[in-house]
Length: 112
Image (cartoon, rainbow, N blue to C red; front, side):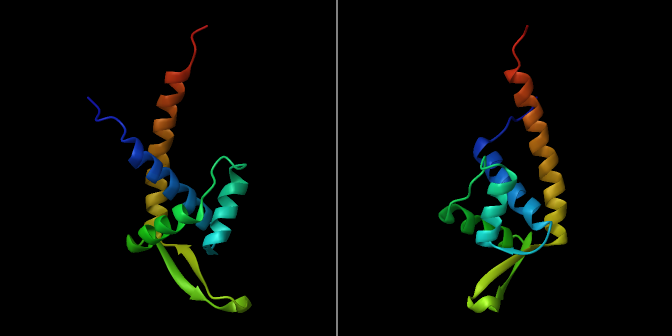
């Protein structure tokens, strides 16, 4: 028997997957990450400032992303890039989220 899905953990995982997927295409600072997630999801997923940065800090602490300070353009910003460990985590967790999505779709199907 399955242990089921911890919904809070699933939301955390989805947030991580969204960020890692965007960073897979190259380093970005926080605001760029938020804009790119919004754009790619057609505004389905929107990060608020107070939500995004704690996630980035956790991903950095877990060595899934690496942040470096950049002062080009006259403004000091932290630019994040995905690590090899982060890419592995992205693949694993994206598969898990897809599996949950498939079960949810089956649950929501209406019999004709």
